[in-house]
Length: 490
Image (cartoon, rainbow, N blue to C red):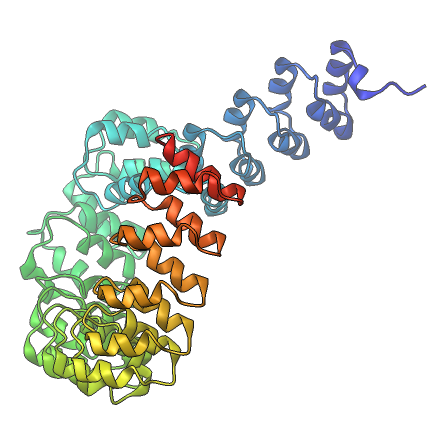
């Protein structure tokens, strides 16, 4: 009779683990009672199927996952990255794996903390960082080790260790940095391979004779390496090639010290993303703003978000065809009542205008007659709406307008007293929900015919012990439970 898997002895499992048949070794790797020693021996198995089976075990010990997280095969590391048993230390290792697929699986399985990604970016950009941070990332995946090896503050003894790294990309960085003389860097600047020119761009001093050649380089990575140097001199922007690659133009658009000639070209850049970034610059002259203001809607949207956007453009864009542009304009802190009044000529603007606190009273009165109930509701909820308009909306045929009046923080007491008896319980509940609901209304609504209104009374912070005592005997369980809970001091 065939023995059940759960009844296999340790000797049986050892025999399976040493079997020449891959399938039997996989069975040993997946057996629920396999000892840690057998699993550790299988973690170095020549067969990919055995190692991947271990990585997919839901109860794989942490020691096994730690060993497989450094497996030479991408498929095994991907399986570990997706494993729910990965702790934070293993995740950090896999988040910085040299293989992009492993990093993608690890980031999908557990989101990378913002500070972790920011620290990697700081090291990649060659910014000054604490030595402890470099030491932490030097022990992580190949991507992190490569960034540390490239960092200007990487100690020489670390570079010696990185020369023997398992990742060839890390070895290349370390080998090119060790013992590089000025002559070697100048030779790198003349090499056909851009990876060598990037190293020269990162390390050569700014006064070197080869620097103009690198600034005129057409390769994206070389120019990005130069621009990302924290000590990039503002005077050197003018020496950058006139029509750099798109990624370089995107970075140039954010540089506040950029020379006028490059900035003028970026204003007319064929890529809308570049022009959008120019529109976000901290300082724009009137002529530059004018040039971008006649661009497409994406660029106009960025200009409309600026605190220094001129009123004339806000007025013009408040009636633009783009709904998103109009929304940004109407929410702008510098928008005036005159602009809101002019924009109300366009029906698509009515909802935004109806809820704006600066909308003139005459416009609100006109919008209170809108056929759109959401426009009337926005008017009813607007704290700037006059009392006569609120009185009109408190008698509106649609309950949405009436409950919006009931929740308006400037609603006068006479209207609340009328809405307290509204036939629709949701309106009455909005009256009770008010933080300033009078005690007399709370007492009367404590006997409301609708249990949801009575629950709102029981939940109101101003409800007295007398009101709560009456609700503690309510026929509805959830009402009296809340009243008793409040009486008990909860």
